[in-house]
Image (cartoon, rainbow, N blue to C red; front, side, top):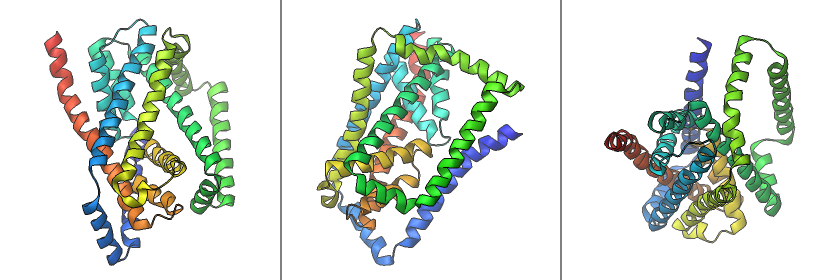
Length: 321
């Protein structure tokens, strides 16, 4: 029962937050500003959106190829096409249930490539850990090159006293969770430890792989493609096209956080993008229109490739067999 409630809340709460932010944003604008926002949608240069979508797909292709290296290290030679299709399905499912796509990737590999679930999922966990490290590196970079802006943005969203309070609560929660994991003998903790041990080979395969430089090269390309996708789409409006590279880094980091920790940024992405761009003298109507255009274009790519991959996976693998 508790598991069902937890799963239900993991789906409903991010969607509810997104709906609330859309509602809040909409009613914070005057009728004149809403007309202004519609004009930005009408006059945007969508050729840069198409170019950004193309670059994003290149990043996904690179991610599919990179996935082959840790799997090969564990002795599994997988099809690049199946890897690519599984990644597209992953992104599609993440739109509905956060992080459910990672499970689907491992299940697809188990079904079509006979890779054990725990090993396939372990390689995905390793990827995600690396992605978190790189995202954190971008956050540090943004912090140093745009210190005044980032400081003002964070403290505008969360006052310093609340920021310290939330940080203390999070630290305390982590310490309690770590204590339970290390010393508890409950069935759930023992099962969790067993599952984690099954993931270790996938995680540590990154450290032992023979083609680690190819893996690192693809990792760099993937994140540069993400940044390039965002940077290219800044040219949809003359107002955002003149922003500095530092502004692009800051906005990119904020958008990446919104996508990583919610239902692919539904509602939160446009809201946070408009908030950070406001510190660069971009008005809220322009920032909101820009955020929605960028987010919508990314979701169109996810939907097209996700549904196509969902249909192609069984068809192509049936033909192979």
